[in-house]
Amino acid sequence: MLVDGYGREVDYLRVSVTERCNFRCQYCMPEKPFSWVPKENLLSYEDLFKFIKVAIDEGVKKVRITGGEPLLREGLENFVRMIAEYKDDIDLALTTNAYLLPKAAQKLADAGLKRINVSLDSLIPEVAQKIAQKDVLATVLKGIQAADDAGLKIKVNCVPMQGVNDSELCDILDYCKERNYPVRFIEFMENDHALSGAKGYTSIQIQNIIKAKYKFEKLERTGSSPSQDYKTEDGYVFGIIEPHKDDFCATCNRIRLTASGVLIPCLYFEDSQSIKEAIQNNQIDKAAAILKDVLANKPEKNKWSEDTETSARAFYETGG
Ligand code: SAM
Ligand code: SF4
Picture 1 (cartoon, rainbow, N blue to C red):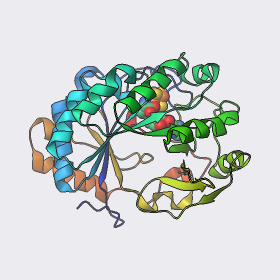
Picture 2 (tube, rainbow, N blue to C red):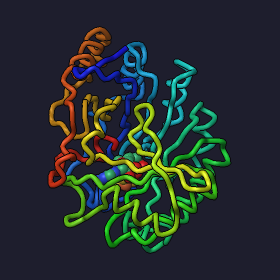
Picture 3 (cartoon, rainbow, N blue to C red):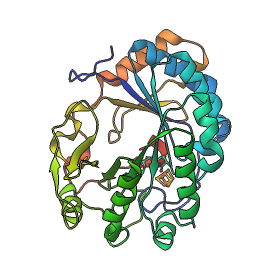
Picture 4 (tube, helix red, strand yellow):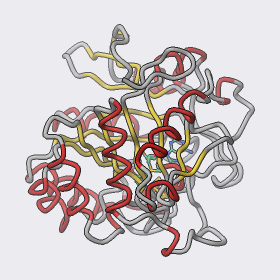
């Protein structure tokens, strides 16, 4: 079992396979970054998998593949298969913008993927285009349908932004409710890479928007899910991810690996260590020792509880 310096069990590894993306979301990567990590600096799937095995052997039970846009990296289904075949009870999931799912969904399901989180910020083509800076909606909706048809369990992520998609939160909730997909509204996390002036909503504000249409009750928090869940009168459960709240970090069970092999203990925390050299030299004990060292250094709290702060880390680099 992996435990951090504050006694929290860490059993969830998020692995970014690329920082590149085919969208330019206002809140994440509004412009193409000045420079990408050169492809030759990325860890190969084999090397990422070597580290994932170390983490699983040490007690990780849940692995999420993310990015950038993970489906941009060729052969992702082979990577999924490696992980799924290593331990069949591993909780393996993928976070994607869904744009490439129409072709990829069935291959991913065949490779052993069970669950997928898709980002869906608008159901109006022009608004989706404004957010992603590309005409994406029709393909995204096809991608979500393809994932559903392939038998993948679907959750939806939505980042409410002031003056952008705020009039649509109930419509997005309805879309998800009709299909029985849990939706999670994520408070915008201020970061230096987002569009300047971009503003999100607090959990209370999101709740007030949804209250215009639905009555709902707050559910007791269970486990280490980052989402505070709410249940509508007719039984649909949706969530709000509230990183600005003081107690958000109390049950954090996550650690993140970037595509270039940097292990990050917290989304907001500048310290990190690379496992690249250890993994590439097959020094498995050393990689396990770095993992434990990084966890010992995991901070108690992130910075978003002080709500004027922003993070220098890019979400497309850490995987969100
Ligand atoms: N490209 C994939 C996608 O968009 O689902 C995976 C990577 S993306 C960085 C992972 C998650 O981070 C998405 O759900 C996205 O909405 C969320 N995200 C990105 N920037 C954010 C921000 N500034 N505040 C809150 N959530 C953010
Ligand atoms: Fe790309 Fe996802 Fe960031 Fe949007 S949120 S720019 S889809 S990595």
